[in-house]
Length: 187
Image (cartoon, rainbow, N blue to C red; front, side, top):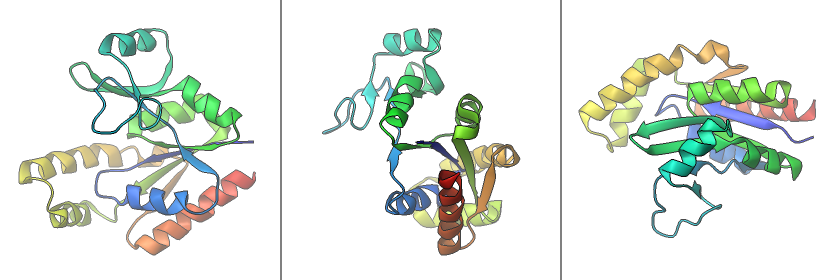
């Protein structure tokens, strides 16, 4: 039976690197395709990178309870995970990876219960997180400050996840996440 794997983490924790490693491990993992109310960029196609909806369509689906989780990032700029999409992937036998914020992760776990494993990827400390964000060289100091404030909030949710993987050494964190997911999928 296919299952759901939920990942949440503060920005700079190494979550994307760990997920990309896991996707290459023959675990039949497939990303959930999120919905958004933003327009497609470049060569993005509806139903491939995202399901592109108008803000009105998005709000209608929210009102009907069609989302496992969603967030209005800016006014009328929504992102969310559709129940129907994840359920269709599960029915095809795909193990579905959801890369979401901590609140979205809690909602998806509550919906799928034992069919879902929620993993929180945690940096060793806020100081290490700050160093990682600064060393990227991609964000202005005020953006880093905002990300660190958000990280404090997100870290307060770590104990609400099934498992916490501390990423102080990338290879160890990847190995631990792989072991946890393999054990979960074999149940």
